[in-house]
Length: 353
Image (cartoon, rainbow, N blue to C red):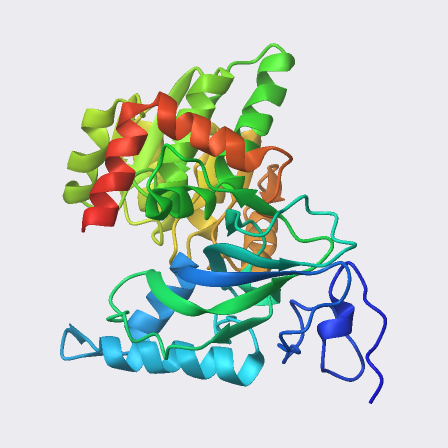
């Protein structure tokens, strides 16, 4: 069969008929041979999307014990059957770190053989082959040691890893780098209009949440509120100084979230949702002032629930979907990590755990 002409979006790797975009495809072509504008990466580590890993963890927990072997088997089955890592329940994937092993002559990505890179496009659209059966992974965390290869398209995005940071730390930051960049943009819009907003970050103690708090403050927020689910998270976030107020609430309880944010100085002009559990849409809307903005960064978000919930509450709020890409987002997130000891401490403590 004749190979199709390459397309910068990766349509030539889609095996579905009729052809759809790679992210929507049920299966991708994972052949090693490259089209002229492609790049092949020798993979050393995957970083699973938090919502995806939590879903796998829930399914494979028996009598309170997480079955890491079952999670590893589930991930291997997904990659083998689909030619990519895309959780069929959450629709999300993650990203990877590896070394460039071949560059097509027409690749526009500016990468060289031997570059150590992190991909800044989702595993849900990246052709992926695992060669080692994930033998070095116990299935008990989001970061997955891996030997295999992945293919980037002409419109893919990748960043060369910085020399001054541990690769696992860089990967953890780059996995969520879209959140702080968009948070900074939204807060900056308020500041440019002469308003210094109150910003609430739901899931403020997590990776994307802590970076978003740092970004909001740097962009000119008047007050930052970090919402966490329990006291242990509050004890981690409070000493960092990233949030002016730290409050505890179950984000799935709309009234509890609204009341917690109001008690901490809200309602918020900007609410950023960074949690990896479903059912937080209504609370985020209630916690936001009329005319305010809600930014959803969680892949567990039901966008129909958010839209219909806002309508049912007669809430005049702007709702944004964080798509994970803002120009310069990786460099900006790494800058925040280097410039805020509190952010770095949270990331390093989570990696150690």
